[in-house]
Image 1: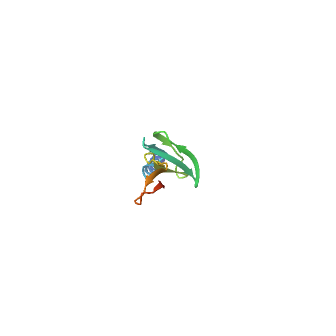
Image 2 (image 1 turned 60 degrees about the horizontal axis):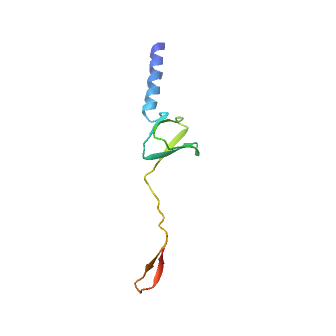
Image 3 (image 1 turned 90 degrees about the vertical axis):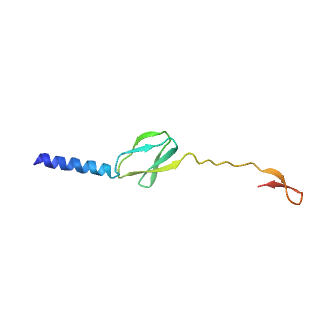
Length: 88
């Protein structure tokens, strides 16, 4: 009887991990992640690989590293009425 109870508890734990309460998450090479615990950011993960989090307490938010911002410096252009103007 105790063996069936232990087997049932073990099965329940495995089922919870399979449903997404896993303490592990995988970070891809093109991603960065922020681990949030109870609404407060705890750490930033930038290295790819298998990482650990506390299940049910911490959440992981992923961001794509491939998004690039590029500010073009202002330069002088000639407008239609042949006047010089700065491109903004």
